[in-house]
Amino acid sequence: MDHLTVVDEIFLRTHRGMGTPIALQGLWRTTDAMQPALLRAIHDRLRLGHLGRRVVNPRVPGARRSWRPNTRAHPLDIAVGPLPEREILPWADTLGADLDPEYAPGWRLSAARLQDGGTVVALTCSHALTDARGLIHAITAALRSLESTAPDASPGPESSGPSPGSSPDGELRSRTTASEWADAVSQWATIFGGTARALRQRLSPAPDASPVRAARDADTSDRHLRPLLLTFDAAHWDTTALTLGGTPNSLFIHLMANILWQNGFPNPTIIASLPVDTRDEPRVDNDLAMTEIAIRRTDTPATIRDRAKAAYQRRMSSPAGLPEEILQVLPDRLAYTLSKGAGERDILCSNIGPLPGAVRKVGPHNCTRVAARAIHPDITTFPRTQLAGYLSQLDDTYTLALVGLAADNDFLPEAIDKACATTGLLPRPW
Image (cartoon, rainbow, N blue to C red):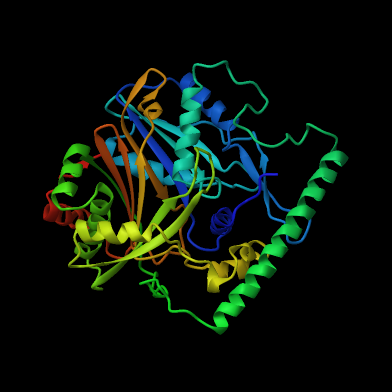
């Protein structure tokens, strides 16, 4: 049985209103009009792939929630009337509504014609279903299968687990219950053993090796979102990083911190949260961990390079040193309290990396721009994070998707220009 991980459940709780709601989104632009038949073919392949699943609650106390195939989907969403370029992000920001990884489809495929004759396509999904790399893998699998035989009404090879109708109800319930009892025993054994070790360690505490202390509480009453999409010439970005003694990734982190300072962040030190992809093969899951570094105003891409390299060797620990599995057996609100603010720091620097060549084309259409980002549908609870950035590369272009989450985001474009000017980077509109 395919069980939810601790990270899956953290994002599931945000969907339930505990924390900051997060949906992931991939955006594609073509220079010409895309036919609805092609979009329907992609939609059907996604419906039968790994995004086509939902959360099922266990019957046995202590067992983990599990994934069940779900071929229901939100209808293909095609906007009425052509969009001007300035309306792409406002339109895309609305597409996270009604995503439900438990009781309804957790993803949506949308498209809109553009006034310049092109098309923009958006794939949006609940973060409970997958992370950014997983979303890219899902769309890559769908695009690569366009030339294969037409999908039928039953789950294809991308689906996992039995269909609810594939065996008699009694036999299915019996197998499920037996699996849940085995999972519950394993979970409780891990929790009891890990808790005992944590208690022994707390009686003889070791010095904290992390440079970061507990997150600061912040007033979020006047904060609002400001999304932006920028592109950079990849060769120029890489050359700039090398000239400054850094790497493309440390230049990214340096740029993010300086944008926040230029936007008025008052503290002399910025704590950056860095996601780490932990998958050993392509799959549609939340397969990530988090680490962190402290950045000072005197830091350069060179000093950040060394600090980030060390940070990637460690991970943020579970609450109070307890085994993380304890979050999966506690009631949701108590688990949320224990894990509140997990991974949240002043900035989020998510380097998604190179995108696969399969996303360059959608059927016969060449994609001129591709972006991967997070959106926050119906947000009421803001995180500690003031600025989030998602960097990806397609061929000779880096795309930086930014989400300002501070109170003073009206001046974010000016802050970006000033931060880029200090290193010689040249941002262009997406």
